[in-house]
Amino acid sequence: MQDYRVILITDDAGFARSLKTLWRTELALPSFQAMTTDDLNEIGEGLLDVVIVGPVRNKRLASVLKLVDSDERPVIYIVQDSNEVKTLKAERPRVLAISQHEGWIDATLLLVVECLKRLDVTSRLRQAEQAAHASSRGAALGRYMAASRHDLNNSLTSVLGNAELLLLDSGQLPESAKDQLRTIHEMALHMHQIMQRFSSTEMRALEKMSQDETESASQVPLPAL
View 1 (cartoon, rainbow, N blue to C red):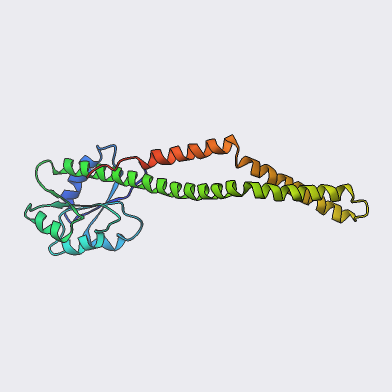
View 2 (cartoon, rainbow, N blue to C red; view 1 turned 180 degrees about the vertical axis):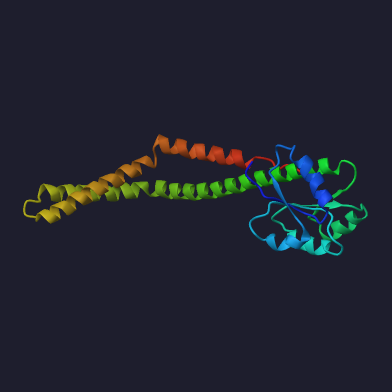
């Protein structure tokens, strides 16, 4: 799992210490940064992957959630009053709420682990989609080249043949013209060899390997939250 940035926002120092104490025992979790609502000007520095919101000062919760709530990241809010959950879900349906009951720290750590797993899988799926897109473009080019291969080979054969005839009867040509003819002949021969590879067994094996890797990555299921 890659290095993710987790932020805890709370004005309750005891809350932060309690979470940090148990957090350190969980090997699957990255370190997190704790800040108060007075430090929110720093929130925009860098990418935030997961945000945990604990008890904050009176009337600051709405502005905190407005700042961090985004489609781009999970936000976990530790609710002190279970009656807040219904209101919170109506106003902020993407925010994940956990009531501050006995065992809330364990529940929070478990939820963070699952959030990070989901982010990790989402990142891998995005990479697989990009690879699939690049692969489809390459496949389209390959089909075009395969369809045009006969005409291209005929054209290259004509260039090679004429270059060879001119080289055989190049006694009256200046040396600079002979060098140019040799270059034309060598490049046409090189292009012919490239065209041969488009239909080779090696190329087909590489295409199948790329397709298998893309399909394998794209079939990874997202963990449910």
